[in-house]
Length: 111
Image (cartoon, rainbow, N blue to C red):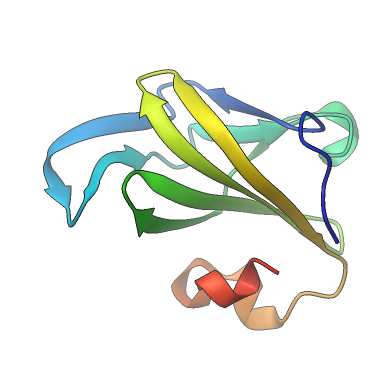
């Protein structure tokens, strides 16, 4: 299911940090649990801490939360200390169990 851009907000209370010893071509690292998703379609408007992250390179990340039975994910490009560019949103009403756990969260979950 495709989400609506603008139906979410990323809240960063020191949500990502610049890492001079970056991993591959990721200069920014998403900090958990300080990064949160919120919006009309996230937990009834109450922010949820991001529990799933996947760095794709070039400072592009998929971040997600499990909200009830839904897996809600946003693909972003981190552009600065408190800024990002929205690339895509996905909601999955029947996610595979492996997609709801950080250790097994992979790019194929973003469908």
